[in-house]
Image (spheres, rainbow, N blue to C red):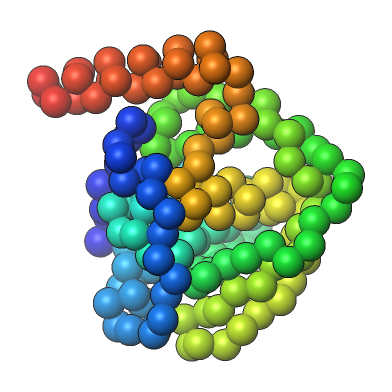
Amino acid sequence: MKRSILIHPDPRLRKVCTPVKDVTDALRKLSQDMLETMYDAPGIGLAAPQVGVMDRLIVLDCVKDEGATPRPIVMLNPEITAFSEEKSVYEEGCLSIPDQFADVTRPAEVEMRWMDLDGVEHQEGFGGLWATCVQHEIDHLDGKLFIDYLSAMKRQLITRRMQKLKRELARG
């Protein structure tokens, strides 16, 4: 089931999420809903707070090539255990900040640890777009948005655009 994606500014997007203690059927359903919502948007990552759930859960799939096999990943309590000194710059966007994009500099590679929906712990390294995406989604779990990496002026401009969009959506 597709879920509604919260649009910035929404106070829930600025809250630090709670660690997942137990894998439940409700959590499995949420993760499937989130993947469906992400693919439909379309996007490459989605964090639980973006659909109004304050749990440390993200989904991502950075396979974008036509005809390539999708690689959906569900991460519970994801954490970065190491990151490269080398940086990369990607033009980032966000499903909670539609149609707004900006270059963001982040570590080019990260080592990750997370739990899957079977309660199994995983460790894996990510580079390129995967590294950028997983860092962007973990930021959501900590109440941080990609616009926080921009100048105050750019951040305010984007926030005003989102306030206007929300007013237009409310009017129908």
